[in-house]
Image 1 (cartoon, helix red, strand yellow):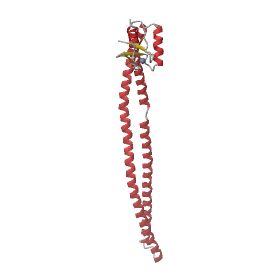
Image 2: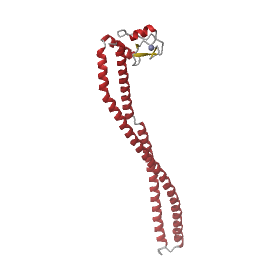
Image 3: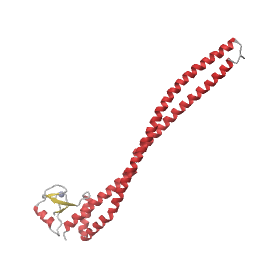
Image 4: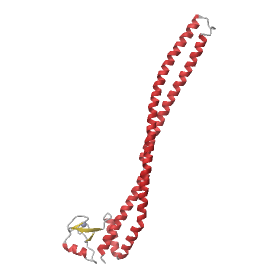
Length: 233
Ligand SMILES: [Zn+2]
């Protein structure tokens, strides 16, 4: 039994397991983050508000025009009824008809402007609705891919864990404790492979004596620089 080799294999499985955990966390975070959706919803809400007030302006002007037209009809009916004969009164009715006509023309101008403005706000509203829907659709397909990936990772966990367990069982308790402690203190990497006579983790040259020790089945050699367990294939 080669202790360093078993430690190296355990390290490989632990690294894999840590990567899986990190990815699972990231997937959960991505799925939960709906900043983009909230932003699109806020834009839609604002566009709805603007469109609503544009609609009420148009509606208000239409009512005013209708009211002034009815008033003008009444005035004209009165004017041509033949009941009013007083020239001063007739003149007043005529003047009122004309004044109403000017008011109506002015209101109709305003109404036209308001309708054009409404057209623009309706376009903005439709664009905001489309944007939100597109984001929701994209998120749904993104999320389904992510959920698929999550399930795949979760299904691989038992296999990795049983491999880790099998390797741990081959180590004596003391060695495993040393490994665990280094794993925690050395950012998840307790074992470094010696490559081209250097430590695979910190890059410092490993003396031949230590390389020899790293090869030996029952000795644990450490990098003099970073303190990690050395493994030499
Ligand atoms: Zn090192």
